[in-house]
Length: 293
Image (cartoon, rainbow, N blue to C red; front, top):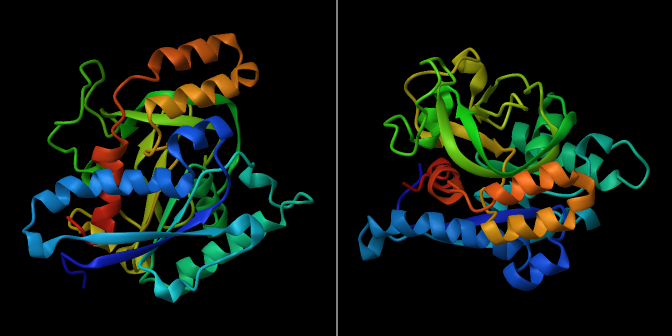
């Protein structure tokens, strides 16, 4: 049982290094994700007394160099994004990805106490580790994008009230709410989620922009149930980038301008400054899964 006001140790599995222009302004992935966690934790701590404050450490492990944590020493592990292609793990020179997939599979199946979070490439690695698929999409998805939430997604992200939702044009169906917005930068996606996982969000181009696995899912008959706590979630993933800012997105778009083509580049630039709910929604959910609310 988690208690408020305790310390969380989080291992961050580093799968890439940000481009120089991004690193110079925003730091490496440990700093970028640290900022996300700090900003999303701040309003939670403000709601608690001084003696019930939660603190955390974020300790990096470069899995490209096959450096891994002693997982029993951590409350959670977070798998970062990468410019690498997850489904090419069998290719020469990609041995580190194959080992990462196997490592995630072992931790997920043998260490149920440890929460697992996967972001973008990390989301895809989790899918491959647990029996889902990852393939090349028809085109890139970029910049701040409206994502449709499933009914379960609305509950996990805490937007059932509609406070963070604006959608006046779609009929009321299971995908009738938008999480507005989340920064995207992906060409690959997960069209088939692993067994026992449940999809949280989708875009017009990708059916799976985030998923969860509940602890002891086999006892839940693989169905999203109506009465759960966030701490019942073992694995939470996001195809989008909750830690990206407008500045980071502008840098990425300019770095990949030729690859994206003029139409997608200019479209992404026009949306880069749109609202990003990464901190308020996904960052908050990450803490909730770790028992901090």
